Length: 130
Ligand code: HEM
Image (cartoon, rainbow, N blue to C red; front, side, top):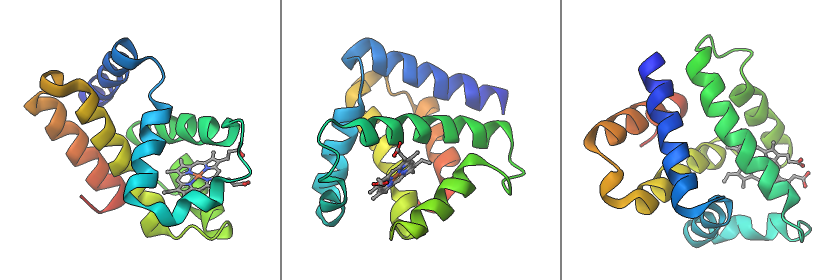
């Protein structure tokens, strides 16, 4: 678990070194892969909601690694909140895959087999997909 946190944290640092804030790239990929969700963000002209969502996605990933008891975790809470917004769990969970794929593209050869193994396993454990 500690190693997982270290690898994920290192990825986040490397991504920040390369591109600064990757939020725009993550949402570009989301809207390319799932154009049907883009209209949900039309009100978000200043990207504040997207920024907050991106930040909480990362926090919830780290929260999941820290506390796999799951029941009370941030991921679980946001999953339920999003059902209320009309975002089904399957769609919600895909955001973690989109995050991972965006980071993989950004890091290129710095995305090592170890990085890939940890991210793939963690995202699979969190979402059951991938
Ligand atoms: C493709 C998957 C997802 C879609 C389509 C989606 C959609 C949305 C939408 C439409 C809103 C704005 C709600 C509003 O207008 O009040 C929102 C807000 C938010 N989402 Fe997501 N979401 C997704 C995945 C996630 C994930 C994985 C997380 C992290 C756990 C997350 C965290 C948040 C947070 C924290 C907000 C509130 C931001 C704020 O209003 O301050 N979302 N989401």
